[in-house]
Image (tube, rainbow over all chains, first blue to last red; front, top):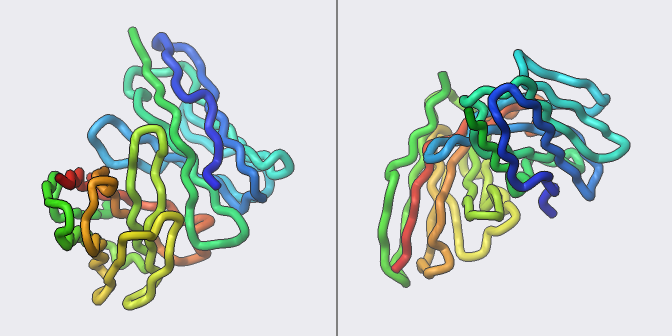
Length: 110
Length: 116
């Protein structure tokens, strides 16, 4: 079963913050985050492993709550270049595959 | 930089045809994956392979098969194409070290396939 992402879509003004959530119905081993710009391939952002760690670089970070079986992606002081569709990918049950969520469309405007 | 190359960016085929989608990666990755991407449904895994001649079904394997004769190449085959297989198809690869849990996947640009 696919993880559930929320919101489905969000529009921001440049400089605003956003949070994208990813919830799984199964226990999570890890969560991946990817961003896909229109007409391009998805690009890897980060991986979070079991242990509740928060990872990030620059103004994009993420957390992983193993107990709640969810992860959140934080975008602070958004830039136009952040626009795109964000996907979380869940690794459950120690398997070898990712199950992706349905995506969150994010648009940053001036 | 990892390069994942899909043979065609756009492809138009007819119902009932046998269709081959090719994917090549240049980073000696063990894992290779085929996804289809449809609006509102995200990326759904069709098949993946963790070694030459090895394959495992993903979440939506029906109507598809795969072939991996060489480590760098992973082919997706639509045995008898149908209109409901019109979609964007994405190939990806990753290292196998530590499993899928902690290895990023690198994607190709995708093949937009239309079945008429």
